Length: 321
Image (tube, rainbow, N blue to C red):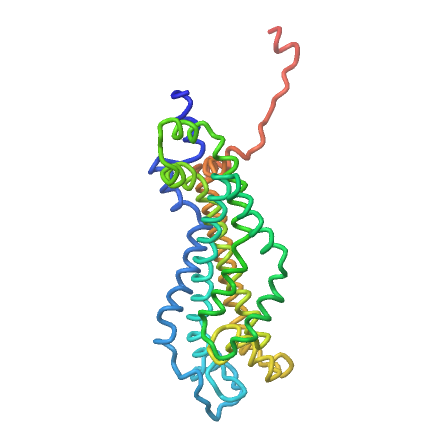
């Protein structure tokens, strides 16, 4: 059994630091993290570098993008670029915080339920199934409709409390599979405590699922927050990409041709989604042993491996000499 443990563990956890550095060779990861890094900087410094006060009106009504207003103005003469930069903080903040809370709940419920089993598994599974059958969007609309004058915190809590069940169910299924592995049995026989087995044997082998769930919950939270604000639910007085779309819709920007008002916030949401998707694919290439092997190959090696094999037929005369 001891001879098999390194091979088993090697299939689950990559301990080679050279292979871990292969993320530098993944263009998907680099592009995805670069996009997310740009929006993270906008969320931090956006309100500081905004050229104007987003609530300040001017005589330039529905002005096209120009040198004075790079993204044009609204129907009240407000600078669209300033609204976009200031709104980036709330949109990104809601996404990241909601994902942290939601994925933390998914990890605690999923891994605890899958590893301990018994009555605890029954209780956690029942709670998870109840949340899964609840219609999420109507529930969020009803709860958010009572928070018209609140900030981003209540909306974040509502989103996180409705986004965790899918991740918990996936982690529970993976934990049920991992706890049957030989290295977990060896840790139990060695007398390791439950918390140590969970932290050192089970949790590291579920990093890929946890990262994927975390990235998905960021995108889910941003889309939900944008959609609720677009519908006028919650506090639309706080600047976000969703509130920009809300005011653009109320002012008939879609029909008046003021594309510079609604395209930038929608494009920002799409770019964040693309950055999260590319990062997720790149991380999967690094963690997955099969995809990591192809990532480690150079471009010339990939071209050589993909080249068709040429087979030359040999006549009987050539064989007989």
